[in-house]
Length: 135
Image 1 (cartoon, one colour):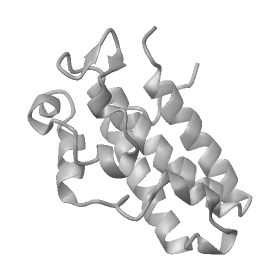
Image 2 (cartoon, one colour; image 1 turned 180 degrees about the vertical axis):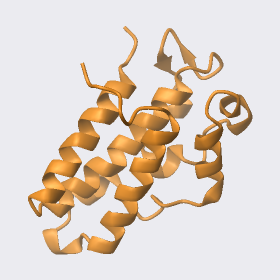
Image 3 (cartoon, one colour; image 1 turned 120 degrees about the horizontal axis):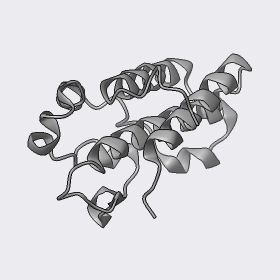
């Protein structure tokens, strides 16, 4: 069954924004990273060499801090030029890790979370997910 990366990206984004508004920054930060990851996967899953039937090949089943550098830019460029520009511009999730979910609350730096939030928002926009209604 094809994976619904776009739906997942929007769900994680919405939950992250909610958690941020409730001052629950560690989980908000985690979900901003996962939202960006799912949005990138939504784009990559549309590339035939990267997915079969909407299911990503193993190479692209990584978290955002690794996936960021694995996206085949030339293959994605035609459909998502804005995403390619973001991926080339820097690595805003280089300091993000799924294992951070085990850290104490004090380990989440508000400035890093805001950087991750902005990067996730830009990625979701670049793959035309923001503004789309979740089903």
